[in-house]
Image (cartoon, rainbow, N blue to C red; front, side, top):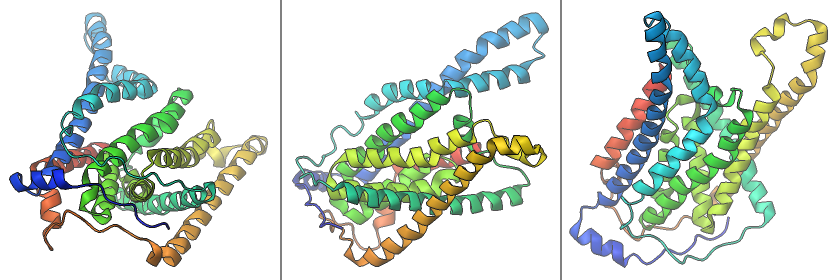
Length: 353
């Protein structure tokens, strides 16, 4: 692990701190992410209504409104199919407007860009895959507990997006849209504005918001851990391209490759297949098992590397100090962060229903 990068000048922040509460920057960031979340979902909801109204009106005129369930199911499937394009449009509309909220916040500029060797990027990719696998195992355990308590089977919203007829759109969203948009939002926008409070707070905040933003138990743990790792990469290198590249690779390995491997295989019906049918899918089933073994190996290797290298990890201390014992109150107990946390909690509840 290389030495931590230098901090930017913080005079402008210090001047603002003299006239504004210490929680102000974190509240402003909370409002920003809350507005992005609401804006993107509002665009999606409006699109859904536009798609629903014509068939419902036609059904009312012809059948007296007896086919609502069929219409909603059909439109939902179409909606998931166009989700990649819809999300891209929603981001293009929402993010530029929301950036006005944080426009006047001091931003770290002209920081030295640290170049990493390809071998080091591969090392961090291995750690990222291991972190993803570790977090996914914990998330699956949490989902099982919730399913047992509730007596219902929780649906994974990621599978709904990936397992639709628009495979190209799903891959485009997973490999292109998500890495570019999410790294811009949760690394560059956030870290450039709060890194003066120290690497520890910055990494924890970037990972936590990134994890909560996914809004479901299936992703929250591994997204939080992965977000923290990517935040560390950005703090060390000041190059968002490394974060985007690692994010792309993780999504390909954890999302696209399994999607292609499972395509056309009904796991629930495998036990009823005839021998010739089993032989047809056997190569893909073997590849799936090998992929899982590789991910488990990455998880073990990542744990070993982190344990061995832990003392070598250097985190820059804060230049904007929060009083001891006040960090949680200053960072989270403000209007912006409370709004963000409540909106993420609402997403968790909706996705669990």
